[in-house]
Image (cartoon, rainbow, N blue to C red; front, side, top):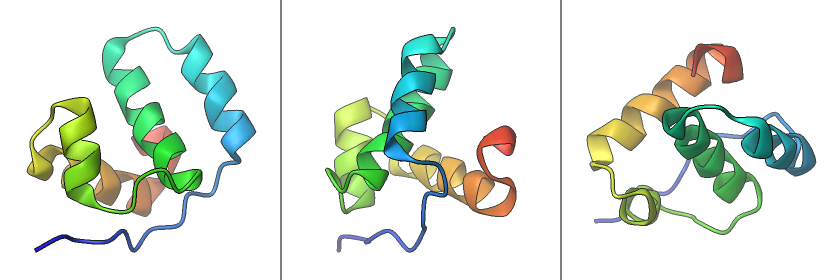
Length: 75
């Protein structure tokens, strides 16, 4: 069963795009990419993000929970 996102990304798509270009580590890039895809509505389900990034669904869930609790700085 597909799980839709119940999270609103606070940052603008433009800000996320610029941050993605300036990200230094692969992990930072993956997390910013995930948020950008969600913000621009290119993905609507956890499994799609998981598939695109090649990460387990539980990893994506953890990242989204951290973002939901503390925003970009805690991610």
